[in-house]
Image (cartoon, rainbow, N blue to C red; front, side, top):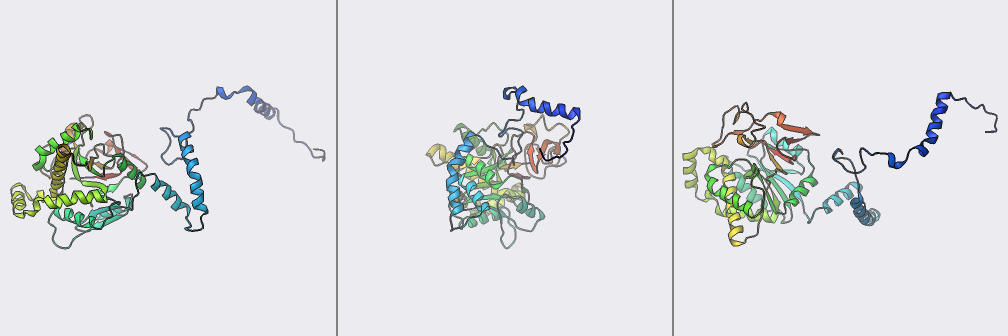
Length: 369
């Protein structure tokens, strides 16, 4: 460089490599390259990876001036975490005043803490003083709780001791809920329970399918009371109807029935009344053109059940898999239900489990029964 410094000598192999690198742009054309993993979202991209495409860029360009104006505003001063949440809430189709998971618990239980730690929204625990009278207590607690809930709030009611979150965030839960386009979504199972509703339940589910409201050929098409999600106003409508029409207004009839069938019926009473509402409501939609409030989570997008009807999954539940728990049913059912299916039937990815027979990982798992 004219300053008298010694120039280091390169070995012949290094010199050849440098010459090859210099000629590389002339030898290789862009059209000769194959992108094995194209930029953008694809089936192998982890869910937490950022990605973009033409549509994403167009929307982000339209939002950028508004986002920047909020950043620049002197008051209220918004931090980046608030801004990120605001954009996520703005992606939902209606304004929501809040989202709450609510459960009824008549006692302390370690599983309740698991739900609190894994639920995608804060959990409110409801309880009442006095002796437990069965799931009638839960129905009345939900009914009373809703009196203080905003009409535009969303509430997720679920069982307290056998439900836990599946590693899916709250905004994905809301996206799935709004995709139903119904103000209330009910969890489902593969068996009609209790059997007292069976005849009318089958008729109502058939009507639900005939009206094009859901795929009733799927295994999980029967109402389960362990998971209910809806707008405040719609849940008030449903629970007011159940409270007004519940059999418990005639306790002598309820107790005499429980005496005949077994007092386990009081454990299933909330599901009995939810079935009765579903039946009344679906026939009112069909016959009186009533506004449809309910959607069934047939594909278990929100509420997944670990209980399987054995004859629904012959390829997955072989002869060595017994019904009940170790072959014994503790509840009054008419078909073999599998409560302890082999763990190999669940695939686990990043703390989220999916049943091998279904396409989706649910937001909640429910070990009903």
